[in-house]
Amino acid sequence: MDKGCIGRRFAAHSTVFEECRLVSDGERLEIYSFENELTYSCSKAAITIDPKLGSIDRKITLADHSIFETSDSDFVDSLDSKGAFWQRIARLESFGPHLIVLAIACVVGVFAVYRYGLPLLVNAAIAMTPVEAIEFMDSGTLRSLDSLVTSQSKLAPDRKDELQGLFTILVSAQNRAGEGSDKKRYQLLFRNSPRIGPNAFALPGGTIVMTDQLVKRFPDNELLAGVLAHELGHVAHQHSLKQLYRALGMAGLVALIAGDSGPILEDLILEGNAFLLLSFSRQHEVEADAHSVKLMRDSDMNPAGIIKFFEAIEKKYGGSTMPSWMSTHPATEDRINAIKKLLEAQ
Ligand SMILES: [Zn+2]
Image (cartoon, rainbow, N blue to C red; front, side, top):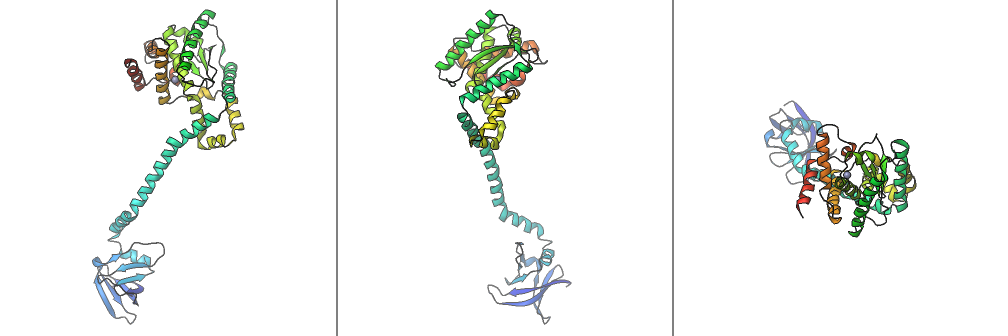
């Protein structure tokens, strides 16, 4: 017997105890009274060591169910060496389920806030944004565009009129169907921009910009109408505002909704080109494609217009550099499949 510690031994199921000394040679435990008399002995394998709980005295249940208590935690740990692994497992079993449940609850909570909380905040912020502010976003973006990358369209007036005619048909079909806000001022604008290249994009207030380069590259009216109907879908479903507000994050949205909207909205309006840097989510693209198919159908136009566009791009560019419309509207395979399914369903 070499190692030992001072403590108290309680008789089984009793509060009666005696001060004593416990020693161990690694195989057996022996209890000595202060008169150095051996009062008890048992095999170390027969004892149970309670897990450490803060600074509470450690408890060892001996083979006869008497309990040895000591404040010498290090000594108890040294006894525990062989059983340490199993003790740890036992501890994991007793604490584990709570921790795991807590960890799962945290993950689910964060996910729920992101999945449902953020979209709810985004929708609330959109509902609270005055129409005038949204219109300012359109005009602000146009100003940025015109000072940086676009100039007056060089398309022939007849050609512009023809496309404006298609646009008017699409907008009235959309209004008839009650999709999109009637308060929006839908307008189609043409701009020349060798730098942007073939592209079309929608601003939140209902302004749709089409570049001369897109019109010249793809002369097919059905195809261009398909693209316009797709962009109208982005406006009707408020995609750009959703993306922009989502980018503000929870804190920005809470500030916006709480009424601290002045400076935030001002920034958005002044930084109008923020809309040009946004790219839509895959879900938004699929939604806008479905809108295009439906709107073209409602307007008695070929609902395959948007697919014609994808096919024309594929034919013209193959794997080489795609026009910029494709970088902001990536045509994924599932997206094309979703459109084909809609086209088959009459
Ligand atoms: Zn799109």
